[in-house]
Image: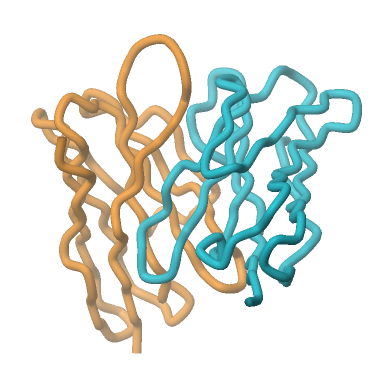
Length: 114
Length: 109
């Protein structure tokens, strides 16, 4: 099976702009989670989508939003970018059903805000 | 609230020496614990999880509920073990992972 893919891999934006990141989960996986990784804060959970519905949300401002499509692909949007939004954004997918909560991560999108 | 603590930001050991990466958690219920590893220029990947009680690449980790710890151990470190290691917790109905701050392991020749 192909792994989780994320596009684009690198992005440079300026303050005040908005950005959309995309994630394609492993085939058959219906749960997609997003994480922000920074040197200062480490890995922090943003939100999780399952069957096009947001199931869980981390402690991030409303500028961070997401959605999931019927094919389980997910997008994350950040509006009114701030310098502090510069980070590696990771997407992870998980299979449905019983058992482990193991998540499979994508390579990430490196966002730089100037 | 759940929390994961990895007290060592950096850890260096010599090849062939034992290595232990510490992880402590706080959660009142029954968590599921994981170790994830990130090798240089590679994606974050699962190393092992406590429910499977397996040994991967010579690493083991035992969940100690009394001490709320999930330390990662390997008896003989190899240079290819050099990487960033993250301890993570998933609990209850929450499906997200709560990560520790990570430990950068360097195995010296």
